[in-house]
Length: 218
Length: 255
Image (cartoon, each protein chain N blue to C red):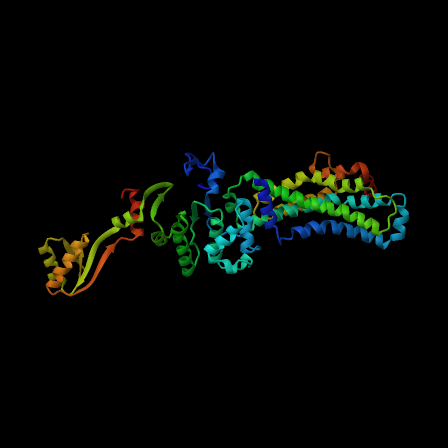
């Protein structure tokens, strides 16, 4: 299949570009933050959240998930597009017997796959962190998956937008600036109306956990 | 435009008897191309660069070794491409173009920015393509001496219009001017030539003869020698491709 071939070529091109490091850094960074929070004041945190330890951990993490996803989308999109910009290989790539839609779909899919892996790492890492912190309650698998994958779904439009920006603008400073600004703005998504795409990842998990968290913070 | 990178404003393109608009992918499969400067992924090795293209083309893995062998990069194949010289990158570019076993190879300015050794290397490589692999090569270049040494058929495009197309041999035939003879006594020699019935004139102490056949020129020389003239030089006064080019461009295609 043409798309599959293009995708496997794109995977090869991303070697040693730091994209996998980035996919790994996101979830590990978020988890390290929580490990520090719980670790430094272990007794206090355990007592405060005794009723729902898993819920508390997920709640705290999920506040940062939209931000991490937006930043991730921005940087991944930029990396994927820049491989071709840097080597000036667009003409060569497009002159190959492959349709343009396959070329660009494959790049988008690559971004989605990298984000998927990040989310899976975060869900899995949360379980490991919870167990390491000796949470006794049953592991809430469904919640663990939904607090990463629902925001991912909601962040896909932004990934598409960022990839488009990175593809049409050769100098990656501009798309990255726009993306990072959007990521930071997404922290205040509670203030925006729901039609703004930046709020979607937050809304996607609001019912379960984040609503309370946001209320606490404001 | 032949590769479908730019859409023609009007008209259509037919390659291998197929319409480019309708069967772009089928046509591109038979075409290898090198567009302007070599574009390789610097952080990957030559093998990985070719592999990235091979995965899209879906040809057997053995092709990678074959094309590396053709461009003589086998020894350097495991190094990251960013450490390559321009000539090596250019050769890798040609290797990528050859990967899909194309029937037509389109090379845009293949010797641009190369040192003389590199130019020679690439030229030999390009000349070997039709002979050894049966590939038609289409080269665009503004280095006329390069074209003269590489091409079998040339076309000249002026302002988007093909104003000239013919074999290089015919072009050189048209380019052939007269002969120039340097002899010990030009004045007497000229008289002798006129007596023989050939036309010619003196120019800066040399005899200028109009275009004539091999037999005729042999005859002229024989007569001169028989009459005890010393002949220092016999030169063909050939117009360079550049002269012809300027002529074509200047006249708007009447040659």
